[in-house]
Image 1 (cartoon, rainbow, N blue to C red):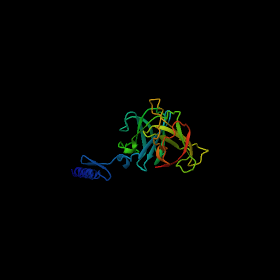
Image 2 (image 1 turned 60 degrees about the vertical axis):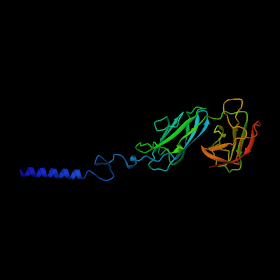
Image 3 (image 1 turned 120 degrees about the vertical axis):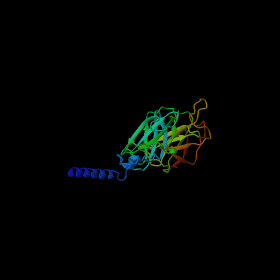
Image 4 (image 1 turned 90 degrees about the horizontal axis):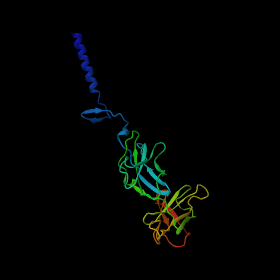
Length: 259
């Protein structure tokens, strides 16, 4: 009988010690008990959103999308979605066209070429970051919403910009785009991989609108021209407008600086 009582006492003592030690630190509380999470600490926290998102239409069926990836060790990958009619509101709203993760992506600007875009269609893009266990940041920053359009239709009237001073913020492989006052894509040029010194470019042809058609192909006389370099805004010096309409091939030298 004494042996039975001793064994029962030891069993109670063992259960008491076990239940008391089940808490631990770094857990997650709920329902009055403490549970340790099965995920790394980063799994409970969504990463920072993509800092900025830019796009430039480039050609028939191509849009260049530039993503500014934040320097966040909790960020493992990024999903890019595309939609017509409205900006993708979540990581499941629209067509997934990009899903890449470390080490393929890293902090800083990353370019993705959307080769499935149709010419003349307005698209809306949005990017969503996620961590190593798949937790997605569903609330991207306001700068991650944008729309773009098809490539320039081209008309018989245009003005050509160039730079030979070496002072523009461009190098081999960069892409410059031009837009009229309403945002219509009206010109483009890609810096050759060889044969052009850094800071220079040539043959940036910007088209005028053709008044004989209902489409908006480009700018009207006197309208200002705006530029981007790899999707980022660039300021021209001197500031330029669509000028000398009716004189195709008019040349004008400018310097482009990233803003």
